[in-house]
Length: 454
Image (cartoon, rainbow, N blue to C red; front, side, top):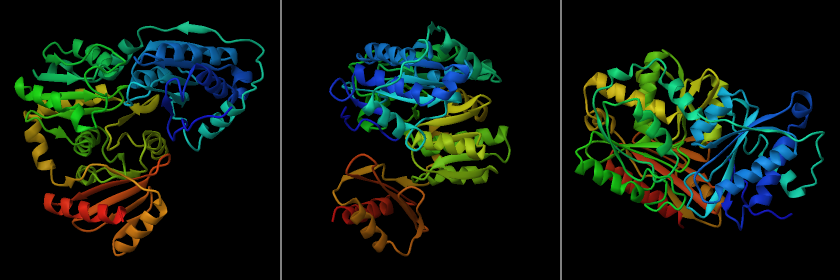
């Protein structure tokens, strides 16, 4: 069986049904169980299954369950859930792993599978994805002694909301006017549930109806065009802040009361500060891409910075290895170390941010203003054929910089720094540059871009 390039570093993703279909995901599910045949034989295997609101998700979810049970695993079906709720379910229900049907922020034509192990530990490149791909291609799975059973589990989101609200006095949070736009995707589900417990907040809803055709815009807040309407609505309503989430709800972004995006690196720094008050001297993880304010705030608040490679599964893995209490990725993933696992916790981020603004008696723009010390290019993608040649040219030009090779190449000078990474799956080079002034950022972005494009 020939398979398109749908097996990514962190999940499986492709266009439905041309690249990804029911037959394929059924084999992926069987491969997931077969990979753990020893555990299955010894203790049985209990696997959580969830799905998002995409039009193809119900039939793909049925195929996943069929594959799991036909290979002998028992299934806990948690239904229509966000990725954070899916992760919570795996941990809370003490399952042996999980498969969620979702293509996150990709356009409506796509779908995919998120695959995790116990305690929501990610399964990706280097820890099982290659084997699953190989087995999916080969097929021919041996039949188990008996098929698995399916249990339908409702109410997991309500359990999650109560769990994440523990230790927070919700009545302390002052009155806020908030505009939220989950782009007709899964973030709507948990935002609705969370705000029910905060009656003092005035919530203006944009695009809350779950709709896999994404009628308003793509569910990717990382692109400015997808938060343009939210920014306008925040200003029009004179709201205190805006909230945007992505397709599967594991990324969250905030717009301040002046209609400006709160950069993920700044939000990450704010959360680091809050967590370090609760856990003095703790370790905080963040990815290698420029976002120096995070490191500044970790050090200022007595924490230990731990730099990671880019990718949510890699950050989670490192958080577990170094015992970090919090971690954040530049793309809007924010991870919390719970007693039962490490995974994205956007609801907790909302609560902690609102509490911080309440306690400091500041609006979000004023709170963030002194933290906007650096100027960022955003992630720029270049289509190139000779990726190795690009790295060689950039390395030669900036040979006098402090060099870090953790993920791609990171070049650091006193007043600017940048990271150049190669895409694992496409002919792309990604550039992220940051500087101490807007003029220098623009100048150096143009200079490095010219070298990449030679």
